[in-house]
Image (cartoon, rainbow, N blue to C red; front, side, top):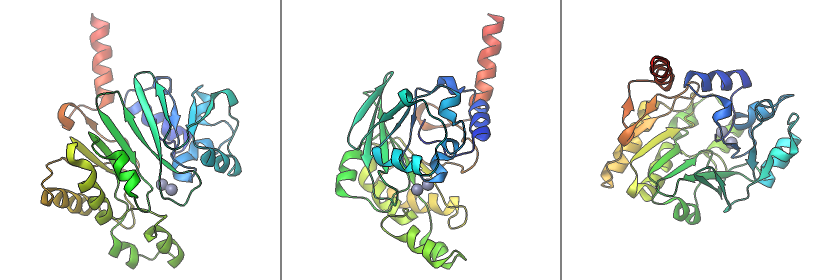
Length: 260
Ligand SMILES: [Zn+2]
Ligand SMILES: [Zn+2]
């Protein structure tokens, strides 16, 4: 699991709603220690401790997490994963890459089973050639399209927050995300837009900007939006949206195994 930014109970119920249990997780990979990524660590008994899970994070993220008041952790289950390093969990290889964001030790992740590659990239103020080179050619992207610049500028948010979001250590606009994805997604089978601002973006607008920019660049890749507060639907073969949710799927499987 990448990040654990929703409150503990919601995280547990979200997992249950897709037919998964915390025990199914091979570990938790933290991108950085902002509240919306580590909320379930900033409590007396964090999610990882409750369920005996390993946590992987950069030194900068660990320091910041402890400074912010991380709850009780089993130290033998806490691992350092520095930028440009890879760790293997089961059949998956997970690599951290440094990113530009206003949090110490912030990283994004690439996950691969040796055949297909998934990049998970949110909370990015700007991108470097180095990061683009590292993440080029993935098959799947979960990618930040945080805001529409005009909506951000016209929003009632404090000036300092607007400066932060729009700045090079803040978040990617729809246009910035579109431009990055045209350089990254030449081999991509699917793109999921994430970390959309509820105040300063519209899912339809973000999707339109990115889809049309990719099409103009000659890239025919399905682009989906991930919801901010609820589990997304299930995407199956060829990245098509499946009508069955994972929860229903789990029930169906339980039923058939019960009758077998
Ligand atoms: Zn965030
Ligand atoms: Zn952040």
